[in-house]
Length: 346
Image (cartoon, rainbow, N blue to C red; front, side, top):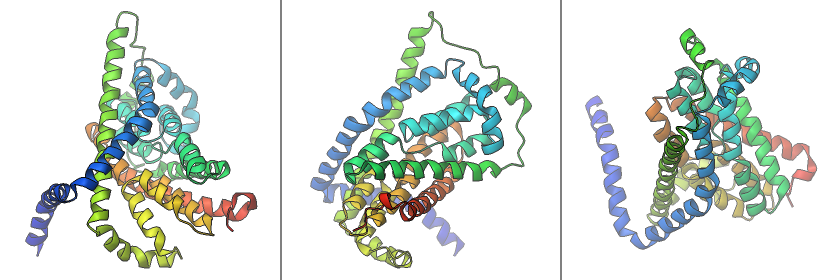
């Protein structure tokens, strides 16, 4: 039995890749349209919003700004989140610019020796989040046609990530911080000057472009995967599979497609959930809160591609995002039932 399980593990991924290749040909027309939509989403939304932030954070890595921020905020970050003060930087940038900025900065910190591996794992669990532009602008105003809903989702998203950060302060606490690492992280000196400005700028742009192209590849790939799942009726089978779980939470079955799509890829899933016609619109908002907190498998794999180079485990990130999605949904439910002006139910 063990031999059979071992063989299945070895051939599972090759079988999935072969099936993916076959379905690319079988559903070529639908896949082509989905790939174009994914590419347009990347070019029109992701590149303009994230590329400048990626370049800026790469440039900041050559200065002592992060070190100064670490000294100022260590008194808060260490007791609350059990991470160095520099950890405030990926948290702030992750909140401002959205996925996957936090993970990119944490990986840089690990490579530069600013934090230990355990601290990088703690940071990764709560510093990688959806940005206000997406939550308030796209989801709140664009999909729900209500600014208050967007602000509510952003507040609960922020509260959820802070809750996860606090809970993860006990993650691998038996590991002690290396004294030499503590010293080196506090003595980072500026590396940028007029003499090497051109080289630093070129390196920063190249690193940022590599990351942005990586994100684009994942967006196009998962747009095609979702198209294949829809056309092959696999999504319908999965819908029937999760129906008992939805019944437990008293969620109508017509939300199943949106939830499954959101678990795979955030943007498409949130759009589907927000568009479902329901007098109890709070159900749509709460489900979107969960999806925004979790982020989706597409973003999970983007993070894995970034953190694997820094040898940071993806396990705390996965646990943290599941917790964040759950807390975000709970906080949203509490807010909707506490403040009447936030509830849009008919």
